[in-house]
Length: 380
Ligand code: AMP
Ligand code: MG
Image (cartoon, rainbow, N blue to C red; front, side, top):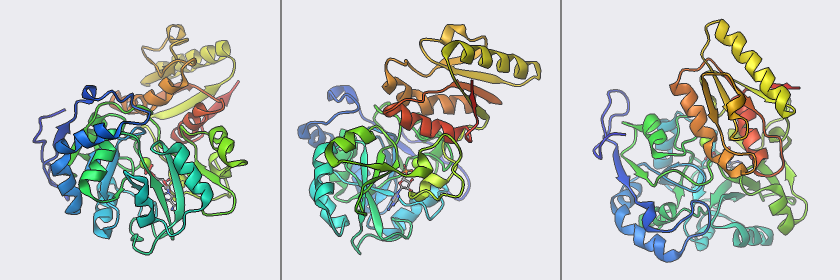
């Protein structure tokens, strides 16, 4: 992945990208759960320079438990603007503001309803983002022009240590070029951001692998704007009925409805080849994918297959990967973006994949896969 001084490239952006490696074995963080405060404090020493970059308005990519984030001082509009230009992100797509300690919410949110308080107590630190009304001090350059703000307290100790060390709240979208799959490893960030940002903090592979659940709490009834690791069922247990924005719920491309999270309207997570999802009973799905593979290979196309641990040996394609095990849905979420990125590296023309239409975490996986496939789904 290059040495610690990084490389420089010619063009609009031209900086050396330094990589700071954090040995996560030294703290027993499982990549998902809550972490002891002492671990967070111990990590701050390695992040002094990173904290300084944030305070000066610069960008630092860092691991969270969901995906890698591209961070900047959220209260500094110029710093936020640098995120948009490094990612090539449309300026109406707001950023999530990350905090290390729950008290920091009051710097950002104008009102904190009791229900939001309860959600924070139950799910923070963790993979849940809450939308609240913003304080006037939060620049609109961070919120995509909105009067509301997205807030999350990540559980990853490196993320929390960086936020504390910087003394700021940190705006951070996923650290990929806009439109590419989100990064789940530092090498993915390197692929997209080398020469564009001064620092990447490498904390190894992330635990969850898909972005946070987004819950809008600005209206009377809570609405999920993006599904994630924290599921509707988990939220309903605490809050009563929770709805899902219809723009992110269906199997078909939403037509005539506008997603409430501005970012959800963009074609995200797209591999360069055409991803096609096949749904149905196991045997017919395997037969269909093998037939499609044969047909496209005969036309001289490069074809890859996304299988599961349970089905991998039954596919004929030369390039086939298991995305994980159906008995362990978290493995499927964790490998999704790495597999999509690999399909680009292999220059595949077609990628045929099994589908995972199930409640809970796999529902969040399918939300990403359907978008990546441009809703190209074959139902048997
Ligand atoms: P990313 O950080 O790249 O995972 O994207 C952040 C997501 O949060 C995007 O889909 C945004 O549209 C959404 N988001 C951020 N702030 C708000 C907000 N104030 N209201 C609605 N959605 C938001
Ligand atoms: Mg993103």
